[in-house]
Length: 470
Ligand SMILES: NC(=O)C1=CN([C@@H]2O[C@H](COP(=O)(O)OP(=O)(O)OC[C@H]3O[C@@H](n4cnc5c(N)ncnc54)[C@H](O)[C@@H]3O)[C@@H](O)[C@H]2O)C=CC1
Ligand SMILES: O=C(O)C(=O)COP(=O)(O)O
Image (cartoon, rainbow, N blue to C red; front, side):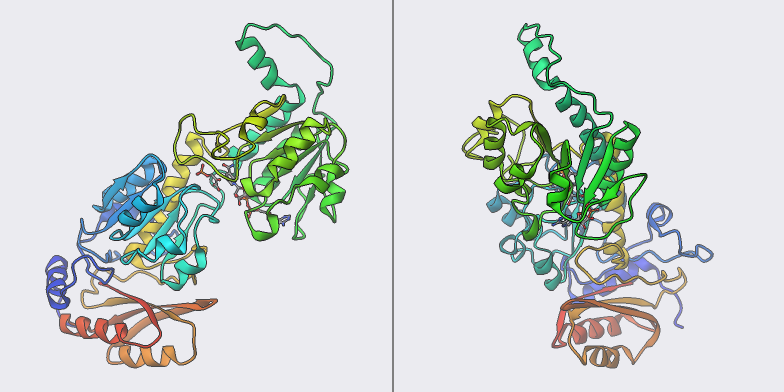
């Protein structure tokens, strides 16, 4: 092994050698102890001090955060010395395209649409963070094929959504929304007609995943009988029962609540025939995605008195920012829906609690930092999941190779021929669909080797993206 050199010096040498400034190639900087302590996966041995790897010198990494991503994430990125640009709302497509051109990472929530048309302008993009559960707003396949990993927070706001739904079940059942609106306009209207306890009523949960299952437990604690429909066979919690078809659920439930992802199969899952199949006087709750309900058909069912009420948190078109924007221009049925009684309308706040947002900020912020600094893709939603134990601090002449490529035969042979001049200490490779990802730690590499290694890997036929960390 050659004698260790100051890491900052090595970084400068490499930057000069390969003439890279802010491209997603690779330059390391000095270790950042706070990151090592906070973010290292628990399963990693801390027996030997780990070498911190970064692809850019401090300050080169540009992160664009939209939609009021929580300050816990900003703190994580600031500690790394990354440049953070923060916006409270999402951006119009043209502005987004301009901004995404030179950023290395972007953090969004459910509004920002990262379509192929937007992503093709993102020449330096390494990673996308969805600071929410849903990832339907991102073209995941296009991102993967461009070598961009996508991370989300699979369950940090599930409890918040489940609690909101419990509140809505009682609010609908007791017509609390209407009573409150009346009182605010000075009207005393004491009624008990068609106001019910929820005890003993049947809750039908469509989609028994993280949110549906959590809700099931809470609802049973209120004395409700729970049934659920899911495309998968899922173990029932408590005394809940899975039913074989959506229709079985619809014609037994007093409350139907939707917790499915946005997919082609769930588009208009609830439309005229499904409302017809529901019990007379039942209620619908949707806190999943706006496309899951045909809202004009819901308006008709409510007007006919078939349903006794509904609570909607999500809509096919949602405003990009706060303000008086929920109108017919956005969704043709908006004013008709707003005029209906016992209909609760909320502005996509299911996951909007201090607890959820702060947890999501830490979770996704940490995942992005780990991917940027170490290449670890565990938990990515569109990408092969690859991780290696960290390099030790004393491994000054070691390089971590991150090589994303098309998943075709023969690539590893070519790449290993390039790497074989060095000592491959450890390597791991995985594929997902058309994309594969190789991570290798190699030693006995000097600065000139790094340049040539980078160039050789960049020239391979099936390469999608290369990063070298050291
Ligand atoms: N309103 C809000 O603020 C929030 C909304 N969401 C939405 O809620 C959705 C569900 O979240 P999780 O429970 O965490 O997801 P999950 O992935 O844990 O569960 C979804 C369940 O739906 C089932 N499913 C999929 N397609 C189906 C179909 N066609 N019919 C019946 N079941 C189907 C799946 O098998 C799975 O069990 C998210 O995808 C997101 O769109 C999530 C968080 C906050
Ligand atoms: O987590 C999700 O999927 C949500 O729908 C919440 O979205 P938001 O973070 O409020 O834009």
